[in-house]
Amino acid sequence: MDTGILSFDEKGFVHNANTPLKRLLGLEQFTHLRQLEKVDTRLANVLKTLRPNDQKMVTIEQPKSKRLNLLIKSTPFVVENKSLMLISIQDINDPLSEKELDAWMKLIRVLTHEIMNAIAPVTSLSENLKKYYTQNGEIIRPEQVDEKIIRNTVRGLDVIEEQGKGLISFVKTYRRLTRLPKPELSPVAVKDLIEKAVVLNKSYRPDIEISVHLPHEDITLSADEKMVNQVLVNLLKNASEALEERDDGKISVSALTDDKQRVIIEIKDNGPGIPPELLDEIFVPFFTTRDNGSGIGLSLSRQIMRLHKGKLNVRSAVGKETVFSMEFPGR
Ligand SMILES: Nc1ncnc2c1ncn2[C@@H]1O[C@H](COP(=O)(O)OP(=O)(O)OP(=O)(O)O)[C@@H](O)[C@H]1O
Ligand SMILES: [Mg+2]
Image (cartoon, rainbow, N blue to C red; front, side, top):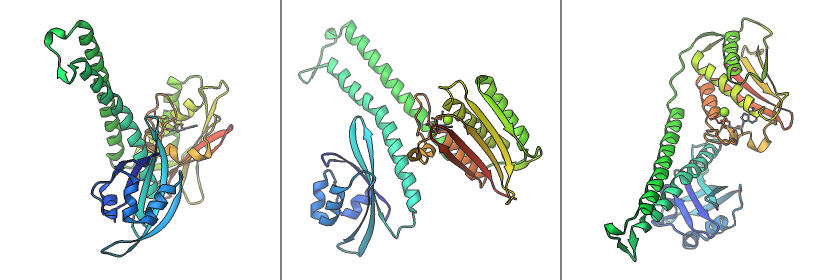
């Protein structure tokens, strides 16, 4: 069975239900949770009493086939001021791992949020614009159109155009994530790599002091220089942004080789830190806490590190510091 995904609101109205879920329940239309009573009372009860971020197991007997052991998880999210609950229902014998499923859930939540926020104003604007041109259900006559109507229409169309363009650029960014090229590996001197990124950061944030620590000057990596440079630039940019509020902001970059010959580059800042509950979230595509952030920097960077068979990790002490570490595999 593929993972079933379902979202519903506080009143039990179903907003979304995917095909695997409807197949599992044997329902063609699924509009309200109360329909579940007829399918399986145990499942209905579990779903109705789920609390945010709950995890429960249910065994259900399917009419024709076998018993299914289902793992049910809930994640709350808000769209247009409505609180919704996103539910995943997974056969525990399914090959998709729990971790992967969690990542999918987060991505779905972010995508839904972005898309709904872009589309909702378009729908309501279209409705309002139509009202200018209709009266008692009839289309108005051309001579009833006045300058005010025309002006409002153009203004409305401008907003619709803008929202559409925003959504297109959102999708383009998303595609960038899934279409990363294969790294072209060559020897890269870590010292040069760091120097270049530091110089670049200095050019737009001259106020921030960056110190570099290299115990051995001649550490080299086997990596795609452009891609790894992008990661370093992203991390320095994030660190600089985290230091916006303070005037004693400092970043330090260090590189070392560990006992397993792994090269590790660390970027540390003395900014506000990241609360523990957000440490996973920040790597989810489009997750951002900044007004004009796109939330792509870290997910892209982690993806690049994975393509290098390496890792991108973070540790942080709130109010003290944040350290991102790029780890390359040993040779
Ligand atoms: N050094 C840091 N200190 C504190 N918070 C950080 C740090 N780096 C990242 N974050 C948090 O992680 C979030 C996601 O970072 P990410 O780089 O993916 O996106 P962004 O910086 O918001 O947008 P952009 O796509 O422009 O990079 C940030 O919005 C911020 O909340
Ligand atoms: Mg960023």
